Length: 99
Image (cartoon, rainbow, N blue to C red):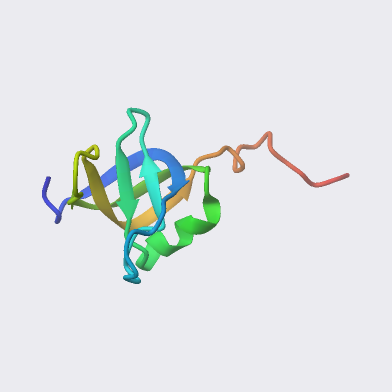
């Protein structure tokens, strides 16, 4: 995958333990239906995802391979350009206003 091509990923937001003290290390990942993890860089638009753990999301950004030690499953690093929560709160039927 090229790191310059924008891709759209759909999944849910998962909190991940920080493995380094670096400020740019992932705090959240977007996990797709097939279980692939896209660890989000904590800068730019990606910084806003940490406040929405477990929410369904559609994310657009650039993807690169995530280098991991040992035999952990492969993953990806995601630089988020934009995102949209897709939990349905913007559907017309959802209205929490009391009449």
